[in-house]
Image (cartoon, rainbow, N blue to C red; front, side):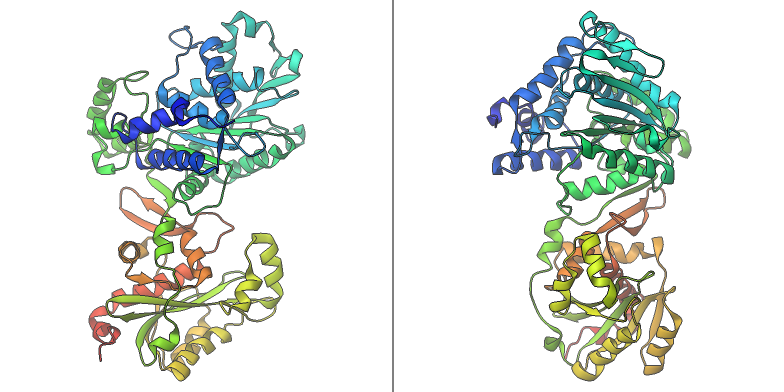
Length: 554
């Protein structure tokens, strides 16, 4: 089952990337590094026959369908992509990847490649009774890939002879397979049972409706042995839709901060926005430059883009795959892991000055309190988490997080029954002062924090300061990025805090260069991270006033 490295298009493509013969961006480099290392370490398996079958089928039976009608000849990057999609298998010999997220600039043959993949899945994948959907918000958009597929097979007599075009689908009687365009308004009761779903230009899907439709289709995959959702797109303008969610999940996978095994992120995106008008940089978002689209075409488009900000924004989206508001995972796993080794305890900092942070639960689940203490040019964060006693088992089962274990370890304190009792937060800060003589000079909190807790803290003598959330956190996030990468900010052995830092995504406004923290998945928690960010915000804000004392120099 396992192919020799030399025989795989995956290895050939990766070798050219490493040699500098092919220019790609950071996400593609990380993808192929992950795959090649995974094949070497036995985390993935490569089925030569399955990869070859897909590639040979496409090049033998599939025609171009616009502007020309000759047979498709796949480029090396396309052969490598097909090898990833169809050749990487699990220990049972079934396809490893159930979700494929393919992002690249326009005019790089996304729709043609997707149509060819549909043809392979319909004719040669061996799934009897396959249901293949071309999905988009409107039927006209869904019909783009669907029509390309029909034109493609119509030019090949052997394929055309097995297909019947009906009113609403294309049907292959010999395998009871149907290919159908599907709009969002299609009723769920139609009985989705997809072997494959192609989600076209997913960046343009409306946020709430698009997310719901994607989840409906994704949840329907379970009835098949090796189904696939193929999402293809350039960047767009819609925020908080399925494109943003897939991008956050994808970058988390590539950075090693996600445990997902079934998502294949193929992200052809430029690295440096400042070089948006460089042909060399544009190659990173346009792997088919020089084949389906010429460098001269880009030079002409660059000249247009320089005429106005709106044209530039359009160019960044269409050809660079840079959203005007982009979202991606923030910190690589190795960066966070390096600063979360077991270290010092509160006992080691008796008599120290510090800053504090509070992030209260907006619902009923998790609240975080923290202090950040400086010593010998290092910053040490200590966090205490609180969770309602009656919610611990429920949340553990729902989220798959060992909360009971964290309670036993003292990282999470049961507080209240169904809601966190904020008196426990107050008591924790008081304990710092009375038991450890650790004195927070400023405590940052979200302005939506319960005011009675703020008043309680203030009455005791804590200097409270509300921290504006959102893009106002940009300065402290920039500082935190450097502090973490330089291993100045230490998180100790707190596994809950570590998880919360790994769950952080960054939503960046390209034009303003501002960004804010978000969850990489709505089920994740980042409360501990926000508490630390609040603490570092007041440290940054009041450093001229309290910085000397914060250094804790005798």
